[in-house]
View (cartoon, one colour):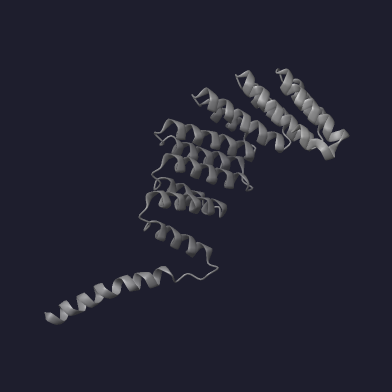
Length: 245
């Protein structure tokens, strides 16, 4: 009986060392193994903020490795609502830069929306929806971006989501869709700001006719003048354009 007890004690003493040895057995270039190891180690972090932040970064890595389901599963392990929203952003933007079918994107953004709906902190929830809309716009899912933004109850954040989507659409050469997103903004000040931003983006790409169309849609005389000034300066005195930005 005493020998059995001794063996048990020896096993219990050696088990942590054995577990630690197994934990660090990954090869340096075995990304799959290292990702699993990182998740295990992250679970051992005692400070919740640090744990949340590490899960967020791990989720972004997993999404970049086309492991979005594993990435999304980490959101439930995060406690802080803002970090949940930023994790949703990281996953969405990583996936948006990959080549996926419309069906794959629809499935992904539906899953991200499901996770966003679990956030019970209104400001963080609104931020999550904003980031989903931005990721949808980046992925070319303009209808999805419009739908996500329109679902936001907070007017200021909804207008911001429309504006952010328009900026992404303009940067990707989808001028008509950018103008459609701006048209959905129900605040003159927000619309003017969005039009000025879009006009600048298009001017920098030497799309002067489109830039002018956006500038001419600005209602505030000063804002319109600044956009017109920028369009002209980029063509006449490009070396001094910073003076009017």
